[in-house]
Image (tube, rainbow, N blue to C red; front, side, top):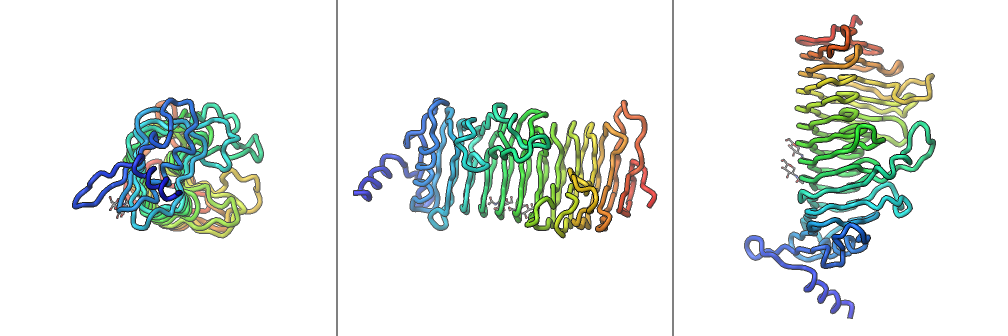
Length: 397
Ligand SMILES: *[C@@H]1O[C@H](CO)[C@@H](O)[C@H](O)[C@H]1NC(C)=O
Ligand SMILES: *[C@@H]1O[C@H](CO)[C@@H](O)[C@H](O)[C@H]1NC(C)=O
């Protein structure tokens, strides 16, 4: 009986579209599973059932179609593994609207992709977290142990996958988070949240290897891209960032189980009106870790408060123990633009683990009209190498 119902459902709910020589793509439309495009009725379970259908369908590829319209959901987990060697495309043409009743979320995400390979999330649609209703509950310095607000889209244990051509607005927590994943392309995202919205990072990554984040516009209240612990082989390029807190590696070293960061290249980005430009931040009293092989190059900064900053005292209450994160081989090359503060370039490295192999090459940062002159590069526990033109003036170490 179950099998018959299954077959019947399959025939009713999915269309086989021929692609190439006899191969067929299964298309599963969420509205055929009862999802309602009216923005009012909760469609979480219908989305999950439609995903399961696409994920477990036979054949080389399947599409989960979220058509035009507004779909309201709470927590949704798109769980794998799917049928072996299958590509699943999630085409979001419409708008997903988050339930803002925080009690419907069992964890810190809204839409999660878990344990899948070969998934592509795209479609030109919008992911609206409606964070305005929840930002007052954001964890911060003032509210100890406040809950982490849900990330709009989480990739957890995802391999060989991509996210592109989507709009994210007003996430409750981060807009997108990628963790414990590998081989991920993120491109053509348009992310927007107000300048003063708390912890609304654009894209946060952790414990991930081989990830490219390119060609995206990110305007938000926190980091445009934040590269947390355990990442290797990260490329961030062609990002237009601002408002926001810039492009950051960190914060690193808050928790005991964190891993090192190795191999990050941030290039060809424009940052406008951000609080930071290129930043590395680590906590004091951290575990022993490394942040190494980092390149920030070809950046244009417009009216940025702290264009280049390494801060190993980040947010630390502990003023005695230095950071145990070793920062080495960091290259700042071809970075130009304007700053709204006197301290344009500051290296505050760890006393116990001075920074090593910091290079500045062709840096040209001018003060905005309100700022009277720039202080030289500040070098605490660091002896950088200077090449080509460097403005502000070199520190005397
Ligand atoms: C990511 O992009 C690269 C280069 O554009 C491409 O070779 C690769 O197949 C893409 N990977 C995925 C999973 O889409
Ligand atoms: C990222 O881009 C690089 C260089 O463009 C490419 O070699 C690599 O395959 C890409 N990574 C992924 C995950 O596709």
